[in-house]
Image (cartoon, rainbow, N blue to C red; front, top):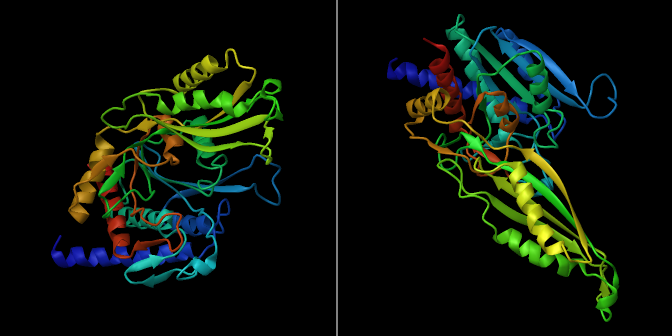
Length: 402
């Protein structure tokens, strides 16, 4: 391809991705409300030959025609491999809109950026997915394998009626994803400098210590839950859980909240509540973390008048896609478009990739820069939009063309 043709292709990607991004960003789709974003995508994908299916899930009695959370599963092709673009149309609340330079749901181009809630996380990624798929299909209508989209509106919320439910439905009907590209904003300094090829697991805990309320002047008639918990919590925070590995840092624990007291200065409280979270590597397991934690607390509460209980919540298991076909396809596409040598990372929080990886799919997260996600004045570089669509199209070429 000549330099002229390359430039023309780049401009086309840029304008198409920008236009679709703006159409999605104009929708105030605060979680779990999709606000019509998936309808826009379904119309576009149907025209490109995709079979589109809306899936609705709710844990409560549905109100009106449909259940609470709307999800889109779209697929073009019936054979393997299945390359799935995964993302979410819901966004986090804006906070006080007076603090925004531009109205958060009025997409604005200024100073080289596209400003709007969801610009980075992650409607521009979805727009780039769509444009890439449209252009790839137009150029290669008889491509190998299948291309799919899994789009939810329940990623920023409790994440119980979105991707996890769609995956359960697909698994029940033996519909497998081979490779998955999650469009979360993975880049740090420049587009494509970082891709996430795994994520740490997240295990949350709420500790409740119960003692006996009493007067501070008569401690022998009471049982102070704060005193009872301190030594155990100190050991918990100083413990070494594992040493990590080549892909993951060592497992970490952080206490995020401690609450106790009655508001009075002369009263020993009855209870203490502490909230803590493990971000854990593939070097340890959920059960091992629980067992070691209980062993610590059992040691300190064995002869105590106070008692403890822990309520556990697993948000996601750790997953890893080692270097291989998908990672290589991403690295090659990024290098071709931006000239960047990509670094692999498993840092950061969780994503919906945690629901897809356990099916056996290879999962990689690749998207725009994450500098302003969830912030006031969320924005993304305009020039990166077309490049991202080109990268996604290049990945499709690397995986689906002989």
